[in-house]
Image (tube, rainbow, N blue to C red; front, side, top):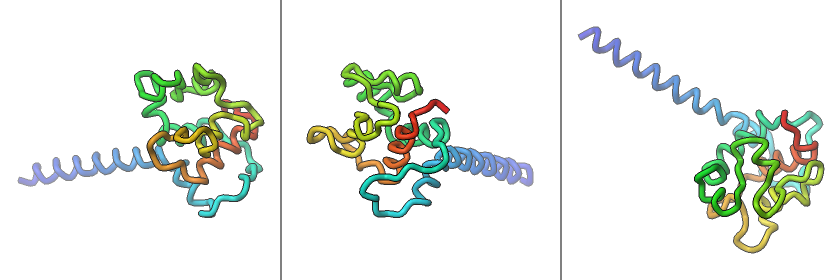
Length: 149
């Protein structure tokens, strides 16, 4: 009987560890929003430190965009936009580029996530808008040069 209890306890610890590890993968997204005020500014201000594509931007894409914008996804089929890699992001869509480094206000990615495109063309499509703090993160990364860092 004691052996059974130990097996269940070890399995519980392993499952809890796996859940914690998965949650830690979203930490950059959660932390970025936790540090921002709820009301968006008229125009996001660039952060003084360099934004990291891998640490700041990829978690946003994984959490909100990649499910559609990857090979086989609905967004990829409609536009050819692949957000599974930096190269795919910078390649853009079959309609043209999505990111213009240092020009976030003219980058189609920002236009779409802010809902400034044609009616019904806000991203993520058919979902709630990205939180203002995450839109600001993307805007700032593009403003800083959209580097693969």
